Amino acid sequence: MISTTGQAAGLLSIRNLRKSFGTNLVLDDVSLDVQQGECVVLIGASGSGKSTLLRCVNLLEVVDDGVIELAGADITDPRVNADQVRSRVGIVFQAFNLFPHLTVLQNVTLSPIKVHGLPRAEAETRARAMLERVGLSDKATAKPDELSGGQQQRVAIARALVNSPVLMLLDEVTSALDPELVGEVLSLLRELKDEGMTMLIATHEMGFAKQVADTVCFLDGGRLLEVGPPSQVLEDPEQPRTRQFLARIIEAGRL
Ligand code: ADP
Ligand code: MG
Image (cartoon, rainbow, N blue to C red):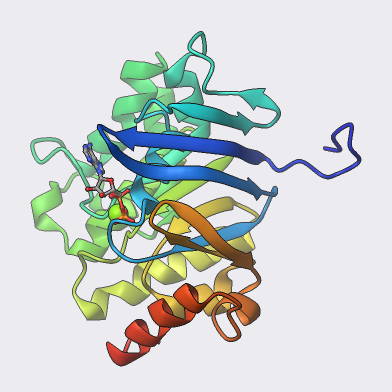
């Protein structure tokens, strides 16, 4: 997709986004492009605005100013059907947010059936394919509390994939997991990236960011301070604030 200026517009194009909660300016003039097939990783301290940015893209927050375009269409337009946008933009949260009283299969078929009116049989076929994709075919009839955290998170990823999204948003999806379960979820994300999925990921997993991200963005107090390839932002940052943040991460033994 080439815009009139000759610049390639992203699959996702965020322009001059502002978001406040009361007097707290949480996203301050954020502009970011995510190209088709690109994996963009958001890093930044707690409270820097990573979750809010992802939630704005999924229309879980109303933006105060700016534009978010998905495949060239402004999704912040109030006339836009939010459910349709959400079927094209999958989101996965830190806390898996599965329904505890439903089976794994029912969790994954819920949105295709209830929101998109898919016949149950078709929704189940799709859901089973997604469960197979995340390596959990044998857990379709299990309840979430019978699964490990890593398995629950993979179900949440299957649920986000079931509507064939063009973009996946992942918000610290390994932060609630025991350390030994982090790897299985990160491997799955790596595979999705290799299959060409476009992803915007907030994470503290710097090793993963280094290996998998095409672009790393450092958010600081709601401003996008530094954007570039991981080799630059993580290994040779230009901004003192980025250096400080990474130094703290290294101190904590996470890089
Ligand atoms: P991060 O994900 O980087 O930790 P968040 O996007 O969760 O950051 O939060 C950014 C800021 O927005 C924080 O100051 C947080 O307290 C505030 N915030 C987030 N959600 C809400 C909300 N629903 N109501 C009020 N303040 C919020
Ligand atoms: Mg967050």
